[in-house]
Image (cartoon, rainbow, N blue to C red; front, side, top):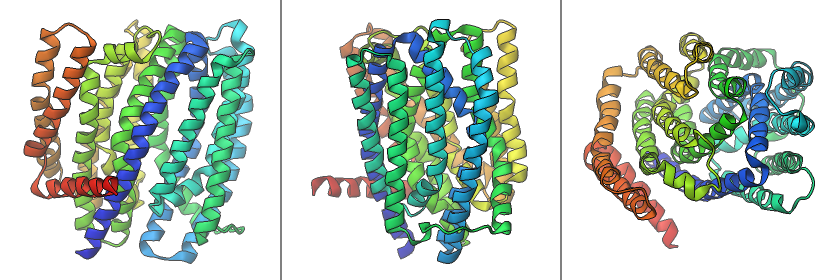
Length: 511
């Protein structure tokens, strides 16, 4: 009991740290995007978004390995075997170097051909796009090499360092954005180069911190075939999910560029910024929760694992709803206040992206539990295979002349099918009860949404768009969500968790 209480306190402490990070980063990120869009212009902003997005497609290799590394490190921490933990880390570093080399070769051949011949980029900006592309490759490869170190920090739940580094990076990006207006040379090139420099500094600092604080990060050459086979086996099957995720984001972004041009890419970029800023709230909670899910599973504590999955899913959704609801009702006003010039479709894209994210966040703890088992082949074939359908369906619909926003509709419908499939498959994998999840998580979420939107709808219908209406709608939506969540959405146990979290937060803030 004491252990569970201590773990709850650790989750609460880490969540508080991550929320402070989130609040700061969200404000800085939104303002940074505004300044960058204004300084670069719609076309250059669209170029950077689509070129950087294409480089992101290469993470279908590294992303699955990153998940594998994180899972194995956290699992071994749960079992408490330090020598085995060191072998996992050293093997992970070697694997990431190999992957970095593969990505570099592929991006400088096939990738470069695609940028030059397939993407829609104005001829006058092609040279700058090349530089941005090379910088994006450098940033991406540095990120690959940073993965084992970042995974160790999260596995040890050292969220204070994680939060400090994240805030520092946001400040650095803000400084770069502000300095763009002072640059007389090509601003796109200037921006891309300095973003790569930030990634390099981040990698160095993480490496130094880990080597000084975690014994298992002292590198030695380790070529343990059985371990490599396990990591690659896990990563190989997990790649289904990674590929589907990339195709529905960066892949669709490229389709939008081909069919609709840079203006729509800029609008998607803005929508992604809004979605990302909101998503940080709930993802911070799951980031603090995920190591606990993996460690409890490694200990064989199935009851605690399921408890974390059920409550984590509901609380993640409610936290995201708390921030999302005001933005959904007042998107146009918010973008008007935030941006100097709002790209066409940005308002619609932002709203649709938020709706998709609200559905997606429900599954986050389910995915964490699935990864903790290590037995992911059948799951990824089915669920990842469903995700792979998004790209060809969107491509076909665009070819048939459907509007640009249809991609978000496809995402939402596929996510519904994926969620239902996850519930069925996790019943066998971890003993999850689908009917319990539907009754006590999904239906409770729906009830809270239904009660929370009544007053905001009435306000937006009766009052013309304005700053006073924005303030009134925001306050009403937040208060309605909190009251509905507490009295309708949460179980008595979950209310205690929320009260403990609020109490710990108050104590820390009052010190």
